[in-house]
Amino acid sequence: MPATIIMGGQWGDEGKGKLTDALAANVGMVVRANGGSNAGHTVQTDAGVFKLHLIPSGVLNPGCLCVIGAGVVVEPGTLLEEMDGLAARSVDISGVRVSERAHVVLPYHPQLDRLEESVREGDNIGTTLRGNGPAYADKVARHGIRIADLLRPEILRRKLAIELDSKNRQLELLYGEASIEYSTLYHQLLGWGERLRPYVVSTEVLVQDTLAQGEEILIECAQGALLDVDYGSYPYVTSSSPTAAGACQGAGVAPMQVRRVLAVYKAYSTRVGSGPMPSELSDDTGERIRVRGREYGTTTGRPRRTGWFDGVAARHTSRLNGVSEVALTLLDVLDTFEQVRICSGYSLGDRVLRHVPALSEDSEAANAQWLDSPGWLRDTSQLLTYEDLPPEAKAYVSTLESFLAAPIRYVGVGPAREQLIDRFTPQRAAGSTAPVIR
Ligand code: IMP
Image (cartoon, rainbow, N blue to C red; front, side, top):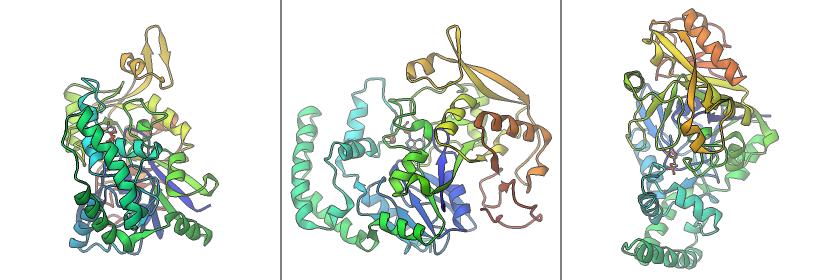
């Protein structure tokens, strides 16, 4: 079956954008499945660095259809800005398609995101404040406005009146905030709808027709599986399912149509926002990783928390998602470390856990058990093949594989397209450009 899922195996920011961009060279369609403008996917090509939030990371491959699936929550202003920004840099955006079923992030959602965070009193989630949580909450509570509504003035008029009335009461009575004016918002939404109209389709029909023709598609998740609302460190999670199962749901693809699940893991760990991170480093080593890995949020600019690779958490996400192949990114960031560590267990009181506990309180209280190995102390960023990696780096990769129980096929050694080693394809000649990634 021809669908490949690309998902993050950790807390997001693993480099999914780079992988999607590389694989999109060989497919006609990339479908984004979940999340919203909370995501930040960075892709570097000869034309420069592109930071994408809503548009699938296949957009830099000419001719690739870039579908925003029903599982995504769309802030239309951000989407249009992103489209305009790409067009201004001569990127062809005619292949963008937006699901009519996707829910809209309305101006009151970021406002509520901020207000809800402010009343959590020291126990905040550390959200991106993009309104994703409140938008998904409205979706499942059946109070959402969808993209299809923006194209139908009469339907929008009725639904918005009901929703805004209740949101204004919440804003005024609960939070003492000013209410939002109906008419301005209504006309803003209609304007956005008109601009998006040429791109809005039944994406599930388009996706299924493409699969029926035997064509390959990629499904791109946002965030990472450790932020999953069911299997992540609840409540310090995002509000969607950045998992293989969530990818199917959000893209409109059936599980049996998926050929492979490619999970992206960093060679170490990062996390933004609150929540447990047993392998976190709050010392100079953590700062060295942050600086070498340029670990600052794409969406918020926040410094990311850093730590060693968490083998317990990686095993958790690899198993739950049926990961069939792994892309290990940012290996070069560890080039200058004399020793590298992997968290192999969580010690909690007199127990050692080999799985991720349900309660975040337990993960917070746990101490990491470490597996140490020597670093390689060599620059890997120019290496072209897996065989060229120093033996210590290969040993590190193979230890990670034992936690993941899946083959590490791709190894990232830098941000550029050509700095991605495909272990299973024949050797590349020095000086060649991007590898053909399949
Ligand atoms: P939200 O998705 O904005 O509600 O934020 C919930 C949690 O998910 C916070 O800890 C965020 O920092 C985190 N998060 C959301 N999107 C991303 C992402 O794209 N990369 C990394 N973390 C994210």
